[in-house]
Length: 155
Image (cartoon, helix red, strand yellow):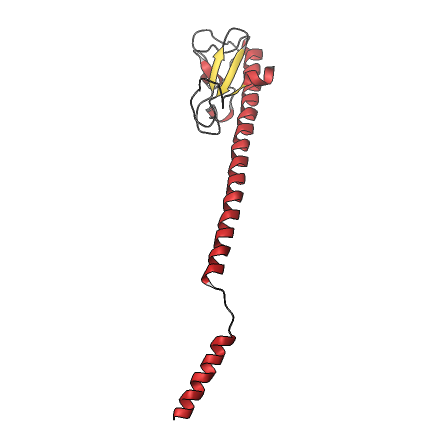
């Protein structure tokens, strides 16, 4: 019986010694490297995502400019700052447009918001208008950083 148990013990010991495995340190190093690579990839993806939002805002501002130009072609004037972009959806109050399309100038009956979910800012100084998005923070900053404007495309 003792011989049988010694034999089992020897076999078990031989099997355990012949099995190769990873140490805890090796596993921790691999996990750390994977985490580092994941962080680098995520940072790169997030910066590309922000760039895409800025480009999208520029494109929307250009498209709204085309709609505003069409409004001027039909009505003979740009909406005032007080009328704002809402004049593209429903007939403006005050200075009236005789040929205003009852369906408005924007499909869907809603002026789109910027990619960050904020309203575009519309300013009219007579014959020239400026469309702005405050960018990611949704507010103007004193140094004008992060602001996307139609004036940038006119220069």
